[in-house]
Length: 156
Figure 1 (spheres, helix red, strand yellow):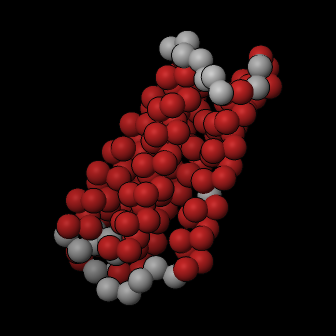
Figure 2 (cartoon, rainbow, N blue to C red):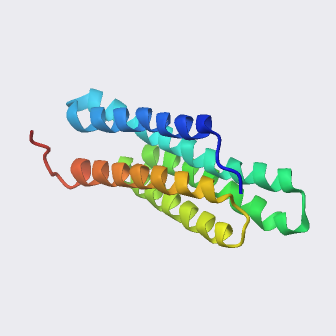
Figure 3 (cartoon, rainbow, N blue to C red):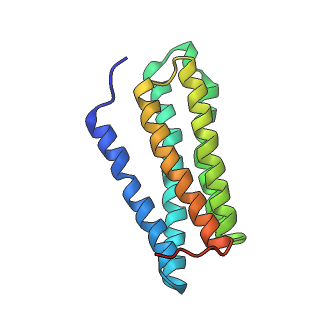
């Protein structure tokens, strides 16, 4: 199986910069400024989650085989829907519920992708990249959730 292009790996890693920057600002900036960055973090994570589903649309449409099937297209829409729900929850209930929804969305997506990779439907190189990126995303969202909503303090 061909390796991922280096630019794909680079862009994937660079995609963590806004996530980590918003998370750091949400944790360290006081009051409204911190809240603004928390909102930006949730919005960015929702957009990235949507992108993950779009990857599968591209794989299905590119393959155009019976194996590619409609179920993968349906599953490819689910991350976007979860991202949208997270945005709705952030406004209606609060940021904590949005963060938990995003954590669940990223976790479910990597699980489904791993199952697809076992069936040869997802390139192995992509999965190595996705596992690394997903681990950073989920751990970052989890850390923000714990620190912001369970009252832990970061002391340096």
